[in-house]
Image (tube, rainbow, N blue to C red; front, side, top):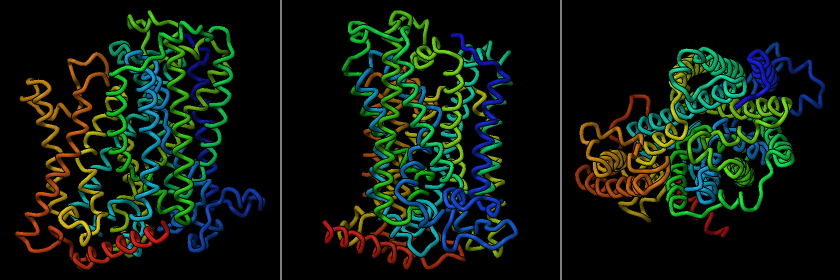
Length: 573
């Protein structure tokens, strides 16, 4: 593939786009607020009645608001923030690869699109309950829910799984954005020997650039600034997709006949397997994405939360479908080249982009930079919020928490950039993280059940923790069943490498793994909850710290709030 963008020009685009977002984030945090015209100030400066402390800059964000943007964001802000933060640079590969693979085709595209959108609908349902269960506890994430509902072991378990998923997401984003830049300036990334010898410095430079700039403006403005930039990024993304749709379909080189389209347009059994796998995998994983859950506390009220996540989910579905259809067009143009692996399905979007002019190539770089920045800054905020509630309890100087979070951001990003240089397959990265999350999704969120109504289905901390271990054991057993070679190292099956499958999501082995794993974790959770209640005689945490409130009071309070919320919802219904 040949594109008309120079290496220097690409760097200019990267830093120009990121520079705009950095300036916007800095202004939204209140720095330079007094220099802004009133109309612009009201549009971009993050505000909350208790959000700022007076300073020479006119409004520096206080720590709680810096971390949570608590109760400040309306429907439009939540919708754009969820949309922009959930759609990273990886989307140009995701459904594109499904669409350009005739074994998966429509059901693969629909499955990936539905799977990416549906977590927002779950948050619409679960979010108000989680928020109510943690009311009055300065909560920032579902790890705080796990502390209030279970105890320290489940809090740390949820935090570990969340960090792992979000870190893998960061690695995938850095891999995707650096691959795209390398591709558009004519540098190979898919030939490993050539890549290591010639292009690793360039792609690492792209990842470092986006990591450094997003860390800088995230460290200055926190979550409120991320939400402000998400609004502009979401609008940009929508506009650019509309322009690309018109342009891609208008040029003669990308026009296809009905007969050519029929080769790419299929409904297959492998597509169905892929759809089921993706829906189960992505729902499990996204429920541990704290960048999403932060928007629950940022919403100013429940109607804003529900409407915002509903609109954002619809926009995500549309964007994913767009790239899936682009993949199908790419395959229909040259089916023999894809079938013979002269061209790769995950690069199908760039194959139809290739005959377009330089201006469109530059536009795509602006688009994918916006995609990457919106996801990376949200993930950075999500990672730093995990234990912030505890740190605020024990610190005499809340400002220290900001600097601790900034240090964590730097460490996490350095590790992600280093790992992204190894050029892992993006879909493979997501699948391993998704499977880890599937081991814990029931043990964590069954905590919303009321113990008086549901009995042993409402887990104890010991039961929930054993449920996670049960889910992990299910994966190990599944690996040995799939291929006896996994007996020597059963943890390798977490990568879901199936030698019998014809493509990354073909076949049933991955699908059954994602079905069986959460079911086993649920069953083990219930069994060990019953044993725990019988042996220990109650629902108490495994251990607690000296500065914790009494664990039984924590559980009783959160359980009553969930019950009250359920009753109120029933009356409204």
